[in-house]
Image (cartoon, rainbow, N blue to C red):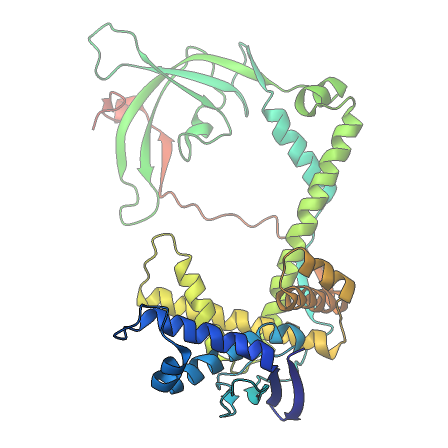
Length: 421
């Protein structure tokens, strides 16, 4: 290895770098050759200027470029070997210039970021919604079952799930022209609030009038134009039996038992993944709230730039940049907290796994950080106290539509053709 850690002092790490004379000579040769190609000296073709002249005229430039090249080459991979997070303070290079024909030895002082010891990350209280997998399977089956519904002629009154066809005069047609037809399945709420209720309990031949009435907002009680419909036909819905034939038709399974088991497996997999993500977010938010500290600005700036560059339009407003910076700060702090938890709890990644990842093209440092942090989050979740919370099934979603279809006596309302203003 071309470097060695020779001193640790607080947040300072002093590393000694060494490039042997033979390797240094190659760097000198390349630098002088590159300069020779670029300069224009009378009597010499570009690239064929003698080294003695190049050295005499550009000696300081040569030393500076050789030193910079050596620094880059020697420091490659250093952060794979040293598990550090740098602070915002730039490294301090010892002012030693290289000498051709000698080993190049110098020291660099790195300033690292010391993450405060994390607190309150064990036995975190998490709340997750209770969930019945059996109920979810039945709801899934019923949903699939609805896809195979059939409608049969009937002389009975319409009810939930039935198909109803309504006729109304063509507003643009000539007198005596065929009426327009409007169809609806009761329960799908395709026509807005109140409509399904008004076509429930009707039979073929029934005629009724309805109009829209504003029930909320600035004009409660305001009514729109009235519309008269005639029931053309009612078809009763019929759902397939939940038998082996249905299992084959709907899912390609031989038996309904196999179909249910597959749905149960899918529901369980999906729910477990959702709850894992939900719990992780709760745990991370908890740790961010209780572990507040300043993070390296350069890390936040780099991540903010990544967020901004990922925007589809490639443009951003000041508000967008502020939001991206806030997200980046939290993500960096999350990374540092989990990293420190892994270190505190000695959650190691095996060298065999690291070697395999590196052989596959991954970076040692990034693989270590990524997988060690995953272990840290898993450690936090495994120690968490999880409480299932019953969901309130009686919560009624607020009605966002301010109007509703209502029945109206045609004798009391001006009946207009469907579609007229």
